[in-house]
Length: 254
Image (tube, rainbow, N blue to C red; front, side, top):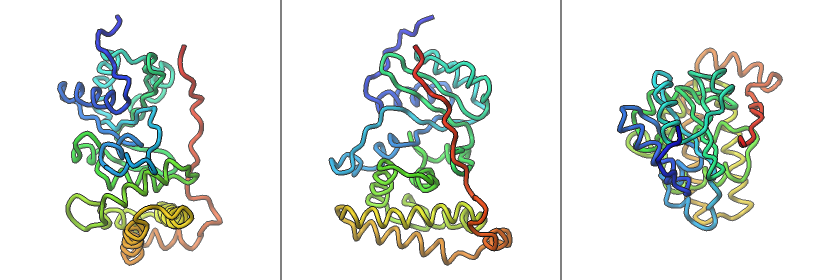
């Protein structure tokens, strides 16, 4: 049965429609990816940082899988049938055929180069995951492109690193890193690379951004490390500590 709902052409509007429809049915979905930074960070609209956000990435709860599927199909999104059957409970993919747009839904866990459980984080934010968790999804990318650097810059530009309140929770990131050498190493390399990227491009308000990056690194470095962290550190980079996500063979359905 065809949906009578008109899906907005603007990706952020379309994401908002999905989230609000789900909320009205007792299902919580929250944005991640580039659109989430656009929703949270005024600097994301600065012409120097603006980037295309064609697709939609959302976080949901595994317990809501079947309701999420009903909501997406009610709104007229076309499921990627085989992928969804094979990955139900972990991840779902839908397509907005009219706007040539993909919607990726992660359930409980965000799994790319590293794995993060964001089930509780879904309960905290309004429309998006909190900035701390959004930052993690960008810092965990091993092979970064311009879009990751732009999202990281606007996050550090618009949010300070804090130990309480609504900024980038340095204590949360440091606590996670203190238990996992692999995540610590990827995050540290990402922050180093971000510093270099900012200096090479002489980004606006660079000193502010670099100061906040330095503050996060300081908290990460000073937080005591677990026994497991120290044992893994002895092996170091001789053994790969991250995954490179496989291409899921995506192609817009016809």
